[in-house]
Length: 118
View 1 (cartoon, rainbow, N blue to C red):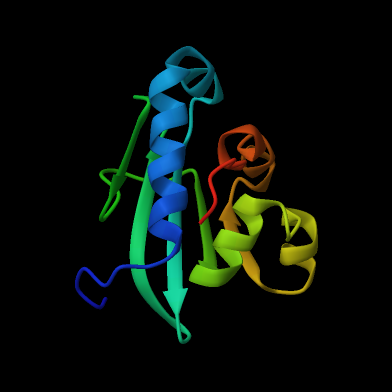
View 2: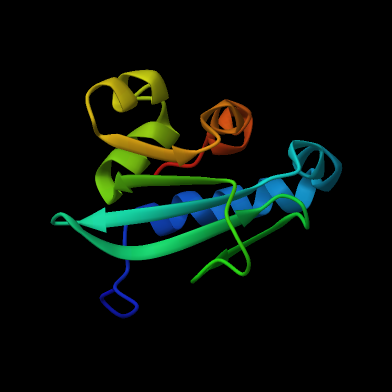
């Protein structure tokens, strides 16, 4: 993994972190751990963990085991958060790869939506 390169999607995860902090009960209700592998030029550049069992969002390797792992490019992650790209479309076109419990991924939608201009 390339060290600490700043990716556009970092702002998306900062927003998710804020929403999880504001809605801890809602986040904990999802009760799952998600690992995002953000790619840049086809290689994993950064990993983000949404540990909704503990209502925490952090960068780095997952502690324990992720229930769902999603691999998506930096720019597609930004488009997803801005609503320019629908998760189902991204998945069907191969822009979003999901392993693990795919049904859990659908519960994430409210946390991913961003109002921020990236």
